[in-house]
Length: 206
Picture 1 (cartoon, rainbow, N blue to C red):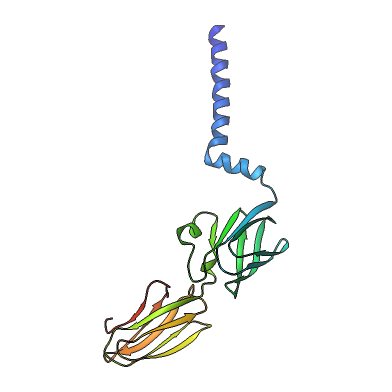
Picture 2: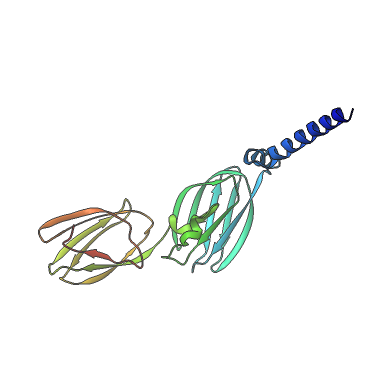
């Protein structure tokens, strides 16, 4: 009789442990989380820029979010995908956001980026969408050089004297630029990102 009781006890213990493991294993956690998932998420805005940050959201619901300079705010949104219109640094961009999970958007000083924190899990960097910047362009050759820099929305044609340095204000440094110029008898062209703290150099090197 003792053996049968022991076997029943072991069987009960095995089932109990297996059930608990199923809940703490990744798949079990996902199922448990889905069961208690609410229809809402929290959206945080950290505006470190010099201007108001405004976001118009269109999706499961419609929201207008405005956060003053150097301040933070939190909002409760209906969970889901949204189309957005963003106004940051006095410029505007449109796109879509996945607001099925909690999100925080970081709005850096205009021309800067939020760095690694803006690309962490469930974090966004407003400068990935809008980033005006003043870029230093240096002619490191001993020649007169004409350079053409453009995106779909911006076109810049500049003339340089030998060894001249100029500064270019661009509306959105988050975009990739196409450039072309002739130096040392060679046509140089390609794609690049323009950065606030990294000069764009005109050289004879390929």
